[in-house]
Image (tube, rainbow, N blue to C red; front, side, top):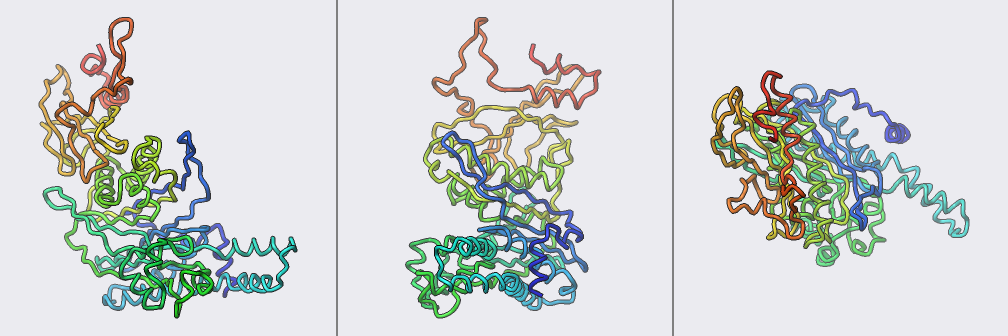
Length: 494
């Protein structure tokens, strides 16, 4: 059995590849990155995150995000094994809440035990070679190094199960689950489901103290064997050799566990919104760039903005991850207050599962019936402590006068129609990623303020080079209208 599981882990093809994917879900990812002095980034190791998003029978769907470390073996194994333990007939619509919670807990226990079965031979060989005490035997040392790479590593996991239109969350470690509910007036209510099992979680520190561990030292150090999580899958060092780790040596029993914290059930009836599962790397990257205070609200605002513009969930999720990655990089190269926190980031994964939430039409915004045309405008806020990315767009009306959208605040002024065609309303929608929700451009003109020595100088004709780049705007507007309508006459530069 151990050999079969080991072959499963080493296989490049997963049996889950044949399972139906949930079509109401999208995933975005980005690999880890370390920035050099010139601001250029390089990947320090292969992507170690994992995820799952499968639709089972009897209305059962399973989603998960796994944050691996010291390799992707545990994250990959956990995603496959959990799927086998939960989507092969173990759950159906007749199960009560207690049955479902018990099944989730048992599934994580099976994953933990099964994973260690796959490496028990390697662990035994490693212990046997270590007892020889031959530090100068190159072959033995090389083999010990290979075995350590084979058995090391772990993962944290956040898993969502939807059954009978009820939501259950199982969490082990430092990933995060957010449930966003949209009200009829367009406001987003954000609920973080559970707290991370980290070295600053009071409940976890009390659990460790009850085992004889010095919780004050744990809080001060902030990590256990290189990780901030107090619960994790795999990682044989903290599971079997914890007595050899100074911080854990006084523990009466195994202090770092794989037991999940189960939340639910949460009824999804009559809920419009979306569920977000995020890896620790994504959370830490945004916290490093902007501070931890409004991370949940910022992520939700980004997702809502992308869902209003993208035509696929995959594109929306990837756009949010790319946006966080750019924010993190921009703060680093800015050299400002939080730049020291942004010299690197780990792998990032975001899973979006919509709940009766409409996607963009592709040519229309959800509430305005107009196409968004991007306009590139440089932005620098002298009062900000970090460089802020601002997305500006012109909204072109389809038939009637525009009205304020429900997810973004906008400033609307009626424009004068161009003869023969409909002209753009003079509208700027700006999404400030440093605040909880989108905001309109400031009335004092600070958004377009020139920046000292960088101010553009007139050319030989006395004209200042364009400060706003409308080239992409012209191209998209022109491609959306028939040849009979002259975009140059009504929109192009004269």
